[in-house]
Length: 133
Image 1: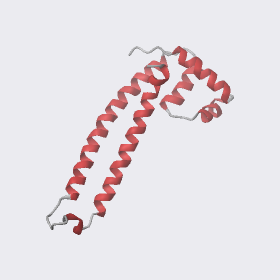
Image 2: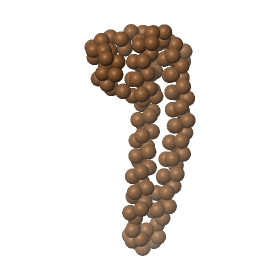
Image 3: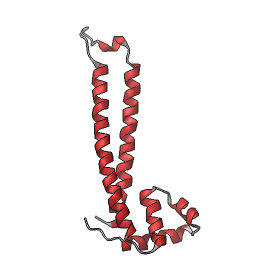
Image 4: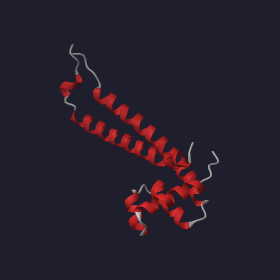
């Protein structure tokens, strides 16, 4: 695993969790829209669509909570790894990009550094990363 892949784990998992949270919101909305007529199948037998939907929501929320626990661990690992970089400016770039999720253009503006130079500094910063895992 490259330094960049290692650092991107936090952002990727965070984005995945956001998708799951959105999925839960959609399921909640769906559950509130189910009509009583939707609780019977074509043969007139009762179905528990609300119950199944609620069960899916509960399962997804448990999965999200587990992934949030993992996200916190990954974040702590990455923060510790970034803190080992001696150069303050390089640390700031890595933190802004991989922890805060800032876009390159925003990092350049925030740090008052030309965008192309931010890319170069980022490359230097990645070379300083030592992955113990």
